[in-house]
Length: 211
Image (cartoon, rainbow, N blue to C red; front, side, top):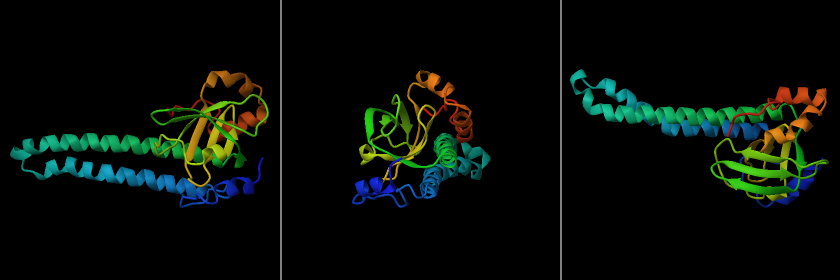
């Protein structure tokens, strides 16, 4: 495990996130992501809901004029709901990991592939054994390499199972699991009971459908 000073010095001039990104507290990142998911839902969901319900304010014999707006509102509301659900679900997944594993600074980060939409393939340094290529996703759906990620991330988890990370400075939250889940099966099976039970508590003992 590397020291906090290592991560902090690398990003001291590029801090952008409105919460701590130095490995001292993950709660700020989680609350920011929860609020952002709900705010985005409100921006699309509330106007869509208004379009949908306005039809019922029209007289019965005039509702045909309002029907196209109501249909658009219904689809907008459903879209907002499913987007919000995915964002909140993935943030909650990160929360389970952070509450189970300690944060440790892992450096460097090897950028393997940026796969659009929404997928980052990477390898984390500072680990003995065969490196695992991890597929990472930002719960808010940002599909770009976070600024400064090559310098390292604050990671919580166990590579063959996956984990969650906070990018120092820019503050992106990432949920990750092995890109090729079956290839890490042998390492997971031989991990020992303690690590397996820990992965179960964190919700990463099995492949998570977040792609």
